[in-house]
Length: 250
Ligand SMILES: Nc1ncnc2c1ncn2[C@@H]1O[C@H](COP(=O)(O)OP(=O)(O)OP(=O)(O)O)[C@@H](O)[C@H]1O
Image: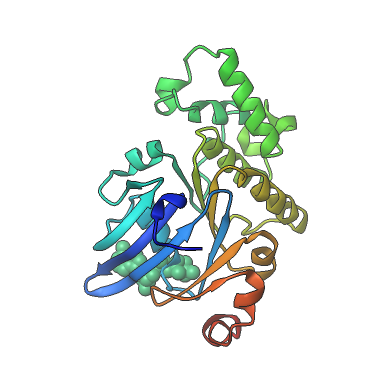
């Protein structure tokens, strides 16, 4: 596959660099993500994984380089314009509203809404109801729609948050350690869920658990000191002596 034309990729990251007081947390990084691909980023603590996601979603400004998303340059856009361009990001700590029902949590994220107060009172038309139900089914919460989010299990809260992103139909979804703290069953269900939602969009996941990585990854990018140490299938990077040396062997 040629990387000469970036038009084929949903996401093309090229020469991406950020310095914090002279320290290059991400250093001349280039990688490309396809449509319907699950890309997993692994690497030791401090490798720059979270910073890469921060750069893509506009939370951190790049010192140099480009992030092209469906051929649109993102590095100069503000965070909410990047969301509107179709990039969703889930952080490790859930930001759901405990007192609202699952339905309401999904509803307030429907793109027409403008935050909790603006959107709670709009007309609940059929399109919104249908979309909420569709997303609830995708994230395995159909049975819990009318319950307050506070009553969900830890794993279900993570799924709800994924649902709150999905309802905006992002073409790129970024997840930071989505199965942290989940039960074995929930992990398995999350792997299925991620495979389903990656159809027709791109998903980038930061993950430490190599069994889970092997289960979900189409390709793995291994970061070390802000640079790419290796890239390939989970199977290939697991056997890479350099990856074993700086990461897996520890
Ligand atoms: N805003 C910031 N200011 C200064 N240094 C930062 C900032 N953000 C990140 N760093 C540094 O950049 C490096 C990369 O951090 P980052 O959190 O991206 O690593 P990581 O691979 O996600 O690690 P972990 O697996 O521990 O989450 C670290 O040395 C961190 O201290």
